[in-house]
Length: 163
Ligand SMILES: [Cu+2]
Image 1: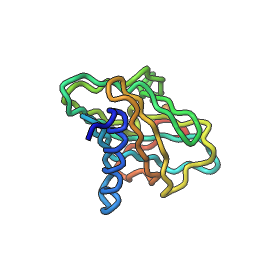
Image 2: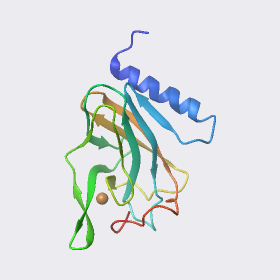
Image 3: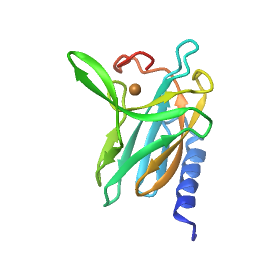
Image 4: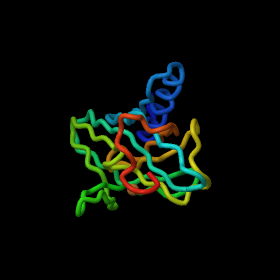
């Protein structure tokens, strides 16, 4: 097929989603040389309209990639955040981008790098799906869906209030 590269990314993401829907395994979204693994978000607390999203990014290509930013097509604001230890307290700071070296994998995890959500239209409810558009320097926009599901018991508690 002779599809525009961006259309191709979208097509792959849709195919993975369709195939992923047939089983209960974690979802992966493929766009060119990038594999976005298992995007998820913990449910919101009370009526809070903020949250966080976590996933992994594997760069199977030969070129350096960079995640420049995230958009929420259904409303709200998304920012890339890092977590740093400062005077014994975990604090978050905005990140300009996330680097994914060729052949490498990065993970966004509770207590580490994450996507911070604010101004959502409502609290994130368990089993809902959240659409995100990841903007990459090389691959362009890649749409993924995050599952809203409880934080695994083995993972670190929230690094700061609200996530
Ligand atoms: Cu944050």
